[in-house]
Image 1 (cartoon, rainbow, N blue to C red):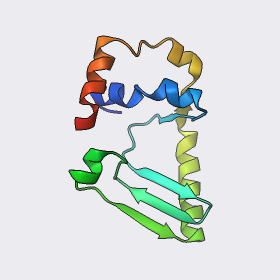
Image 2 (cartoon, one colour):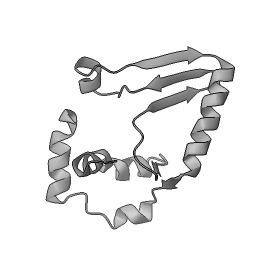
Image 3 (cartoon, helix red, strand yellow):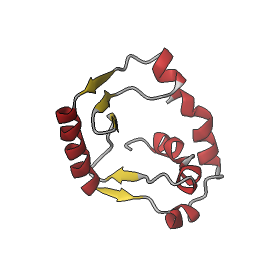
Image 4 (spheres, rainbow, N blue to C red):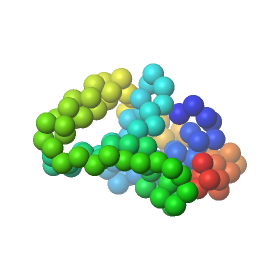
Length: 114
């Protein structure tokens, strides 16, 4: 994530997500803006849209929804290649971060505007 404030805001829910069993991977070469969802190896939603009020109501972002096994297989292959260039965030490393610090709190306050 290229902007420090955006990075802090995006990480504020990580401890809770990881405790719930979510695995988080950070792509190492740079940030990735695309959002990708693959369901049952047949449905793909890909685009720039986030699942938040700002994206739904204000931003001009869009996703493409495709129901096709071949397309889903292609996207799965691309995702797995990107995952090889990513680093998994561990619970141990989160224990060393201070999510209650003032910068983290400020990032949380402005997160809906980012």
